[in-house]
Amino acid sequence: MPCLDGWRGISILVVLFGHFTPLPWINMGRVGVELFFVLSGRLMAEMLFIQKQALGPFFRRRIARVWPALAAFVAVISANPLGIAAWRVEASDIAATLSFTVNYVNLMTNIATVFDHVWSLSVEEHSYVLLALLALAARRWVLNVPLLLGALALAAILNGTVQTLLGGLSYFQVYWRTDVRIASILMAGAVYLHVREKNYVLSGWQGYAPLFLAVLGVALNANVVPDWVKYSFGTACMALAIGTVDRANPRLIKLLEHPILVHFGLWSFSLYVWQQAFYVLKEDLPSTVVARLLLLSCAIACGLLSFYIVEQPCRRFLNRHWGRPLRQVSSTGASAH
Image (cartoon, rainbow, N blue to C red):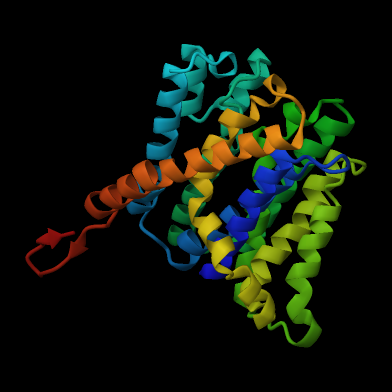
């Protein structure tokens, strides 16, 4: 759906400008990641519980979506042809990145690297496994999936709240972990499935509810708001927004379908992967608008090169030859792609 690509485009733009033109009262980079998480929850719920995609092709398509661009990024950074100090990594960093365990390994090492942003991809990959297992269970037994996802999301929220308020742990120690941050993905999936099941209709001023909810969700991410509120009530607002966005006022949908937003949405993964390489260079350059715009321009340029040279060709090739399920084509049991 173009409006979902538009949401994805807004998410990556928020991350980019949050990293390269930061605001003093809110961390927009974190907001952008949260927008990505709730979108993933909505999309995975659609694929696994509505379309009921076969799990083999589901995982193969996820691999085709993520691995080529990420592997190319890791290869370039590891080679470090320019000898940039901020790009130096150890073999353990590469292993943690490619195994999607960055968000837990970094808790033990407490060492920042150019691969730090893969923590969010790790949360998403782990959520794919959990949601696939739940989908498998739902296809065998009668389950109230929205209620189950909501209960798991609440458990993850309480987990983070307890560790923040009673354990006194920091944002990085709590909200980079899958067992806490997966709440954002699960909550969005629960909301979307519930809205679809009840077939809610947004008429009149209600058609702008997704916009109001998204704005409120962003407001609840201000620096003065405690983390446990950001990732409970703030996330709930964003989950409600993405869960109802396709029922929004046509004007709002048309805005999300703007070609610029849609294109940034299509480029978003490669842009997200590559922006970190230049974000970590901020400390090495003067803190001026020109320097930040230069880094932002380089990040976008590398992201686009990655999309057109690596991500898109590899994804098409893998999906064409590897990502489609086998179909029964005759009573003899013969099958074909």
